[in-house]
Length: 221
Image 1: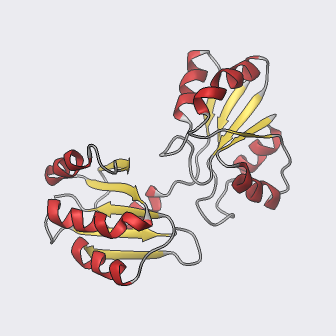
Image 2: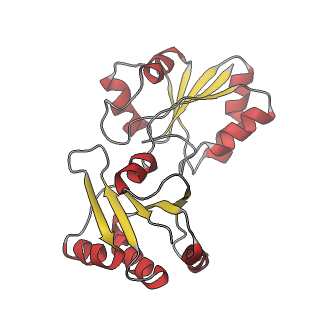
């Protein structure tokens, strides 16, 4: 009886630990955010286990059943499409419920996108704040206003179709000279890092519309 939280590669399929692979081979059930996406990884490593769907749209509905299965003795692994579960991905609710029912939880170390983005930025990272995804509307102004006094390096995720607008907002709220680092498609073939003033990088991506996963790192005051 146990829940094991297993990080998966954020792009390059080789970025998975031996311990993670061994765990996925040993558990009774694998909970996946998107079973089709996870099947690619599992097939690559010739892992064949029952794959159950667990994502933000059904996590409340299936919670009770998963707890019952583990209480009956099953060991489950929780994975997401990429990175460490519960970091801007489903997982928090299940971990909390397991702990509430005295079900052991183990989280393996592994891939997560914001760590390489922080390191690649060259900004101070002895202290930083992780913001996940910013709210699209409600609360966005409040957060951006708070950042005006933030001394720590800030790291957050953004979608490609909102990137230019976000960078222009950063220039407005934080000043045109505030430095940022935009990391795109980390660990993948077209990995890209752009470091400079938010306003300048916004102009670059306006001329070169971005695709893929994006992490933004903002230098503190």
